[in-house]
Amino acid sequence: MNFTIIGNGVAGNTAALALSRLVPGARVDVYAAEAHPYYPRPLLPEFLAGELDLEHLYFKPLSWYAGRSIALHLGVPVVAIILQEHRITLADGTKAGYDRLLLAAGGQAWVPPIRGADKPGVFTLRTVDDALAIQSYARRARRAIVIGGGLLGLEAARALRVLGLQVKVVEFLPRLLPRQLDAEGAAVLQGLIEGRGIEVMVDAAAEEILGADGVTGLRLKDGREIEGELVLVSTGIRSNVALAREAGLEVNHGVVVDEHLRTSAADVYAAGDVAEFDARVYGIVPAAIEQARVAAAHMAGDESATYQGTVPFTTLKVTGIDLTSVGVIMPEEGREAEYQELRRTDGAQGLYRKLVLKDGCIVGAILLGDKARVGPVTQLINRSVDVSAHVERLLDDDFDLKSLL
Image 1 (cartoon, rainbow, N blue to C red):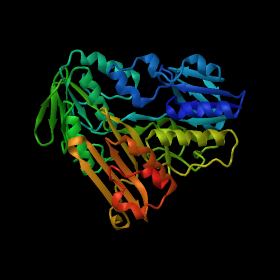
Image 2 (tube, one colour; image 1 turned 30 degrees about the horizontal axis):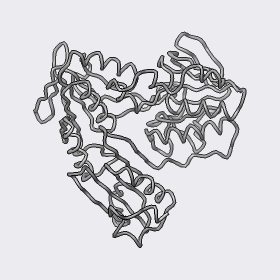
Image 3 (spheres, rainbow, N blue to C red; image 1 turned 180 degrees about the vertical axis):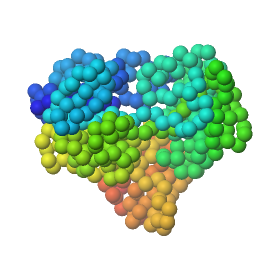
Image 4 (cartoon, rainbow, N blue to C red; image 1 turned 135 degrees about the horizontal axis):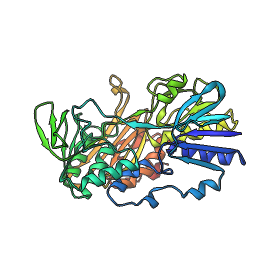
């Protein structure tokens, strides 16, 4: 059996390791456009900041893959999939056959239509090479502007601050981290970030990147101008669907897959940021891992393996601040009456806690600056424990959530 994987991100790497275990002796070929072996993309800001070198960024050395019958083809882009022949075409014109194929080509940084976005000094951060280019350019800059107040944008802002630049974050929406925080939590986070020397501007829409031969600043749609010699655009990703579309696979926002991660073509699967399940592209690491494992199991012959979706879960440090966001953090408009929301805020201490309950059970939580409660709250959500008898005390400092498990 010859398994072929296009893409060497978290989904491709997870699937390759799973296949090597599930089908001992099978050949697993992984084709990657990048010249680097797998590395976790969430660590790129640390690499940009100079806090992590390449050796420690990489997941494993090349010899580790070879010992597991995984053949990495680095810096070898796939330019076509020939479904009828079960073959792929590489950039040099070479063709390679497959028995079962996994598309794990991920996504690419999306740059909104901002005038001047093609100027020297404008960057995105998606790859090691992006980080190296930003590091080099930062040596000639004094001020940086980060467009986008999501997870990557804030971490990139911290990295640029570590490199010695003055940094401003410009966010189009009224608050930071709109997918992970509500308005109250975002206000606490913004105060903490600004306390670390990073200026934050919300409700600020970028219109034009200024400068002739290079960046000199950013003009907002309300007419304000911000000075800066480096602009980093961090406004989300779009699935890499060109290869799939040209091959004739069903594509919407991502490559459409079923509960087995099968695409519309026989023996072709998709997982990670390139895949769309139930009209949704998750774009988060936990979903990529879960999808890759199910795809690999099914590719290996396990017909029982199914994917039912991923509960959104984010646990990380944002500019050094512990943040966990899990499950339903903001009920859908019109359904607020079905939920109960509990909050506790301590801006001076940089703490924000929020629990969302439905039918007596916790179904979502935001824990900012409160790492200790992450474990028990997550278990309470996963086990659907009825906590209704303790609602008044759930957020108290001295209440032991573990006692409810």
